[in-house]
Image 1: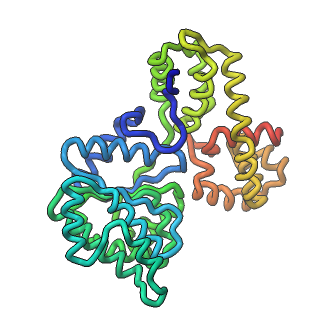
Image 2: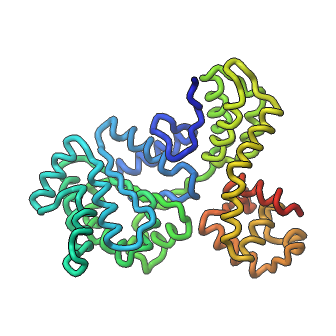
Image 3: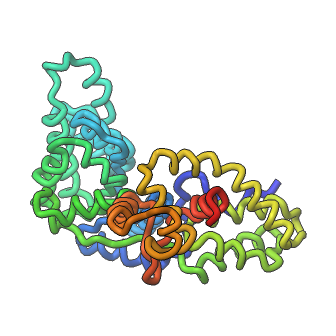
Length: 363
């Protein structure tokens, strides 16, 4: 059986990433030039996949990646363990050097979590362990060309003093290693790098990861069908129009259509209707859950934007949505990645959430 050319569960492999070639080149050049960069974009917009492609391209010509995932941190012990796990994934000559340096500091890469759990709380000092791990990383960068990816960097906000430790240990070595930060909470990421009270204030260029361009998405869909002996029959334009550039949702919709077309077959309007119904059935419960967790003002604002693309006017009046409430809610929803700006208008980031809102609450 053919494997679907439209994977959408989790980050893509490096060779599966397409449609963002200019951004890939830009990020790779920034890393090579040792320009600290922070990628900002909504969740499921392909930031991790993009960085995997960049890492693979750079690794092919020399620099080795060190990938550190800071998702959902709540303590200094979490942060130290995340750095330790990231260092444990390093392989080859770089790992040999790293292990050699670590052994001289009485560190066992990949074992910190176990060691912290075994020690008595009063005897453990995860902050000291974190500093030692970062020192070993810096020393390794003096001997090998490496770059660091701090993925889900917004998680650092959950660790009191965590960003300060990272900056203290790394700031004098920014010219010896490339560093990229990526995060899916736009307001948190902007605060971390734009607020004067934050340790990383003005330390990195903010680069927005926006929606995929329509023409790039069109080519991806058409190519996927062509490579597997199928024809879109004109359905591609419907996928592109519905997805609004959302990478993961575009692949999910394309996959749903593809699975309904036999090898040698052609999709049509009925295929699209069935595929969309299948996807809606899979995501509607999640959309309802997201909506239900929001305050009332946020809910009304999302409904107004989904229906009219504006927080003012007749739709807002029908919802008894005051301008003050709408302004505050829209700022919060932009900050948490549920809304974005597009051509001067507000839009719901997830097209399937917007679709659910319009069907569930028709105005």
